[in-house]
Amino acid sequence: MISSSEIIDLPEDLYRDPYAVLAGLRERGPVHRVRWPNGGEVWLVVGYDEAFDALAEPTLIKNWLRATGRIGPGAIGANMISSDPPDHTRLRRLVSRSFTARRVAALIPRVEAIAVELADRMAAARGPRDLIAEFAFPLPVSVISELLGVPFLDRAEFSALCGRIMASAGDASAGPIDVEEINRYFDGLIERKRADPGEDLLSALIRTTDEDADRLSQAELRATTFLLLVAGHVTSTNLIANGVLALLDHPDQLAALRADWDLLPRAVEEILRYDGPQPFSTRRFTTTHWPVGESGTVIPPGETVMIALAAAGRDPERFPRPGGFDIHRAATGHLAFGHGIHYCLGAPLARIQVSTALRVLLTRFPDLALASGQERSWRRTLISRGVTELPVLLGS
Image 1 (cartoon, rainbow, N blue to C red):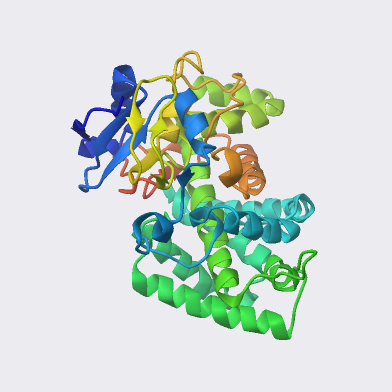
Image 2 (tube, helix red, strand yellow):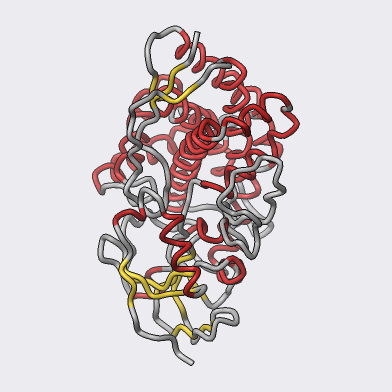
């Protein structure tokens, strides 16, 4: 049967603590029509099994223009996250040819060197430090700069642009002026790379062709570069900060990690499950009557669907003691990076950055602690979860 037309209004508290809100929804069923605090209405999938299926459901499409007849908000051009097969297949194939596991692995020494340099700068100052401004943000911005081949003299400007984009939304829907400015910068950078290519990812993307001599257009290069920028620095910034928060909030788990660094890979997966950097998926659109698992709900065509990745990570049917933070847990199977054809291409790099960041921070600062009396302020965005600042004490 077609589902009830009841709309559930979600509270403002969703931004601060989505988990309690989503747990309440999940107790009532795996999918609901909801109204966000900003007024938008969608179908929201909150059960793990239903979320897993929805992320790979071919009848749920991502292309705004095809689904609604209009361009979506914050549109940045043809990119993988807002396209469907065969366009998505083509774009992902071309980008994957250059964004290889070997290229990511080659970045590991630079990620560590940058993390050590940032920790040194923090250690040289006195008083509470903002871990986001001084470490969790500049680390991934520096890494994405090197990955894309942003010239050294441009990096201060590039970092400022990244900061404005993160402050405005963090979900590829930055203000139009910021998007225009970063796109102008990328157009210029692309032309410089065409004239004088290097060994960086952007030069490789410009050179890349497939068996049919297909290649990325100028607009596709710009949109792909923008997507890599946003996904590459916003996700990693929040993942590092959320990971530090989770460990400092759970001293027993922090002590266990310090005592056995072999637990670090499991700790990273548990952080992703427990408080990942993206609580909700981007929008999908139904193209036919879509039955949501065995819930009895059938969503009609032309409707908007989002998946609560945060709810899936704390579904007690999939993860025992879901509200607990346990770095010994085998948290494999979480959906923090998605699932299906839109699984995050940058997941390996994000894991490398958070692993390196945690090891460097916790080794360099054995007395690292949260500054007392600081109320946490969470970003007011559905797509990206993170605090706006994270004051910490480094210890003696």
